[in-house]
Amino acid sequence: MNKFIIILFVFLVTGCAEQRIIDDLALINAVGYDLTDNEKNPLKLTVTFPIITKDGKYDRKTIMVEGKTSKEAREKVRFKTNYKLESGQVRVALFGKRLAKEGLLPNLHSLVRDPSIGTRLKLALAEDEASDVLLLQIKNEGQNATYLEQFLTKINRENFRTNYNIYQFLRDYYDDGIDPILPVFKVEKNNIAYNGIGLFHEDKLVEILKPSEASYLFLFREEMKQGVFLEQIDVGKEEQASIMLNYELKNHHIEIPSTPSKSKKASIYIELIGDVVEYTGKDDVSDPKIQRKIEAIITKKINQEGKKLIMKLQKLQVDPLGINRYVRNKMNYNEWKALDQYKSYQDMNINIETKVIINSSGKWK
View (spheres, rainbow, N blue to C red):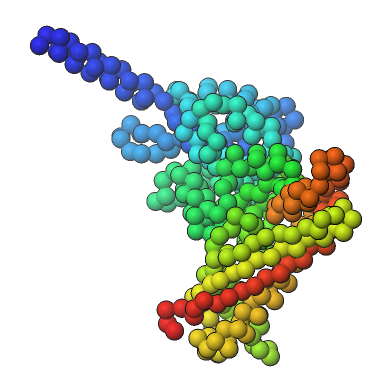
């Protein structure tokens, strides 16, 4: 009985000591990186973490510092708070537009070297400054880091099926034949809003696609399994209609001729099957003949807009679709290493062939 009391006492004392340690910790949940105009300290680091106020309310604290490097800036953050900072709970790393144009790799390497930070750390871009997004107080939304993490998870789950984590970015960076992409957020009327997709040449931001352009980008990405097609389409003489189609990607493949270095051709084939959710035209979309007509119109629209997008990607010398991976697979190692892949990609004739099948006209049929 006496041994039991001693063990219980030790357990309680240990638990209390651990509680005091936890109370002293600051679990960083988001970090932001921006460039400054200060030559001595060109990097601005923003960190945010949850705290409990003296009156017991849940709040957050945000600290900004400037430094020469990410590591130096993180050391400066330590002297701005009485909490012991821990990086193990970082969920989102946000990068300002100016910094992203200079390259993300130095800061990504700093994050990867921290053994407490996992490979599931999500990455995103700010249309302007990362600090603007992290400093914003969103009413009734709690932590910005949690809000951004849930936003990225929602985008991945509902539409784009693309993982925006540090592992995926670095994998695409180091993989021959594909370039990374990241989502872009902006501050809009005291809220954080998604505003397109950032295109990278290696680790440098080259261009930001508007959401409407990004929707076509994801139509042609291999991992895209389902999505929403929402467009104004020409359905007759001087007549337009708005149509929303929930679709599944039934088939996707990219074909490269056996001698890509000579022919410089590629073909992207996609097959979509979907349900009409909304249609504002005068025609009866439940009529099979009208459905075939709309299928042909959507097919033409996707081919036209897709071709415009591909030409833009080629001009920018960015390959987020991974066309060059298929080129690489048609060549031996020496041929691939001797190839100027971006020049070859830029000169390539890339065709798009789409097949659209309307499965149903919605529940109102």
